[in-house]
Image 1 (cartoon, rainbow, N blue to C red):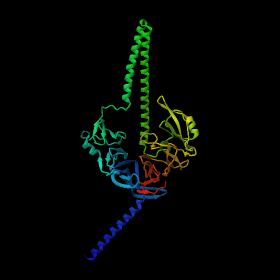
Image 2: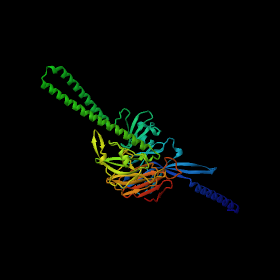
Image 3: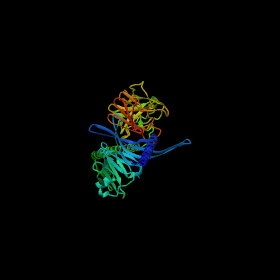
Image 4: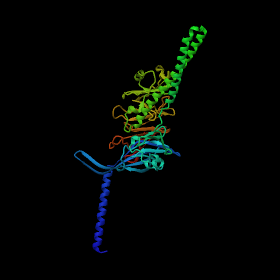
Length: 470
C-alpha cells in the first residue's frame, strides 16, 4: 500500500475512532438521565419451590438533554420490559423486551392479573407470558388461531377486556358487540351473549321469593275458607284452623328472615366488591387512611386499635371503621361480640387492653386488597402506624398477635404505598422514593419477612438491590 493510501486509511480510522469515542462519551453523559420504573401491580408466582415477582418495567432512555434559565428538558425513547425478581431476596432474575413505545397504539400499559400460572397484561393488546421463562403464550394473533370464530373481532381498546381475578377468566366484548368469556388455561372463548349474569345470591332469592308467594296464597285461601265456614264450625274446629294459620304465619316470618339475610349478604358482598375493585384499580399512591381500618372480629371477639376517647364513640353494632385523627396514639384492645338479627353487637364494657403501655401513632389494621378486610396472619394481624405526624411521617408496619404482643416492627421508609400484598411468609410493598419519577411510576420494592420483620429491597430505577435496615 502506498504511503498516501496508508495516510488516508489512518486518517479515516482516527476519525471513526474519534466519532465512536464521542458517541460513547455522549451516551455516558446522557445515561445519568435515563429513568426506570415499575408499573404497578407486581405479580407473585410460585412453582417447584421457586418464588418470583413479575413486573412491567418502563425504561426511558435519554436521547438529548438541555438546561438553562432554570428550566430543564430532555427527549427520551421509551421501551417496556418484563422483569422477574426473586421473591425472597429481591434479586433480579430475568429481563425481556416487550415493545417499544412507538409500536403501541392503545393504552394504558398495565398488568391485568395472574391466572392459570400465566401473567396477563395489556400492552397495546391483551398478552400473556409464562412468568418463569418469559415465553409469550397469548396475544391477539394466538387467540385468533385458538378462536377462529373471533378472527378480526378482538377489540383493540383496553376497556373491552375485563379480567376477573376470582374466576381467572377474561370477559371480552367483541367488535360486533357479542360477549365472550376467555378461559385463561385453554385460551378458548365461550359465547355468553345471551347468558344472564347473576351474582351467587340471585337464585337463592328467587327460590325464597317463590316460596313466600306460594305461602301467601295458602294464607289467603285459608283466611277466606275460615271466614266462609266459621259460623257453622265448632269452637274446637275453629281453634284447629287458627293454629294451622299460625303455623303458616310462622313459616312466612321464617322465610322473610331468610330473605332478609340473603339480601343483606348480597348488599354486603356488592359493597365489599365495589370497595375492593376500587382499591385494585388505583395505580397511584393511596392515602394512608385508604390502606387500613381500626376494627376486626375473630373467633367471637372484637379486636381494635383505638384511643379511649375514640372507643367511647364507637357504635355498639360492629362495622369496619377507619379513624382519621393523625395525632391519635391508639391502643390494641379486645371485647366480646354477640350475634343478633344478622349483626354483631359489641359489649363495650368488656373491652380489655392486653398491653396498656403500648400505643401506635395513627395505627390501624392493614387491609387485604383482595377482600377489603384486614390481613390475617397465623395468630394476628399487620398493623400500620406512623413515625411522626405531618407530611414527614413514614409508614411503619408491625406484626401483632391476638394477645397484643409485637414480635417485630419494620420501616420501609415510605410516606405512601402504591401497592402491597402478602403471601404466607412475606409482605410486598411497592412505592416511590425517587423524585425523578412521575405519579404511578414506582422504583422501590420492599420485601418484609413476616416472621422476623427483616426487609429486602430492590430499586427499579438503579436496577439494583438496596441495602436496608429494619
